[in-house]
Length: 257
Image 1 (tube, rainbow, N blue to C red):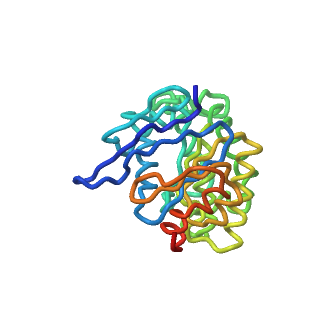
Image 2: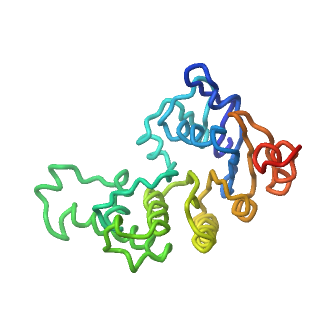
Image 3: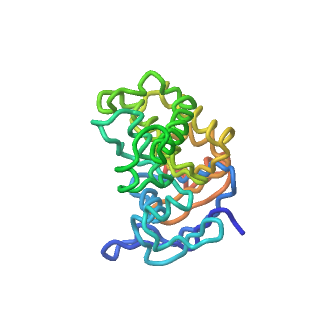
């Protein structure tokens, strides 16, 4: 049984193929990168995985279970978390509050139980403490202590990207989907993000499926790379193999094949 597998996935929008026959497998503990130029279908692929889109053809398996057709919350409960290309945080909430939102699938306190049981010794109070401890461990991992109680909207862009990563980690995923985690970052912030992703892989044992345009980052952290263009797979292999493929050079790096 494979950990994560995509088989012959295809998506059409108005007769135009956004994804056309994409297949690949991700092994546990890998950092697996999907690369390609703008419009290649990378984000559409992620939208199919986490239930935003339903593909017209193909199958997606996570730990042997078919996930095509599941809603995003059901996919999250199975252990798949995601960050987005554009930051999707709540600006008027603090870092801690945004990270706590990532714990929602683990919370058992309903409206009535939460309304009638107050205090630290209540079920709701004890559960709150457990979730806060989980979030504090993420704050420590990502070194967000200085912005714990600051409103997210007032924080630098790079810090917001890190908080969004933290919120995804708060779900305690087994598979983490990162949609261009370094987009818009400067060189120092990108290097920091590489460090965090390696920590997530090595210390937390989380498998990472990554979309990224920064080829240096892809080369530095990926175990396997899939290159696609116009929704179709070009090649898959180690970063070195993919980087030297003539169609990748033509489609992605702008060099003649």
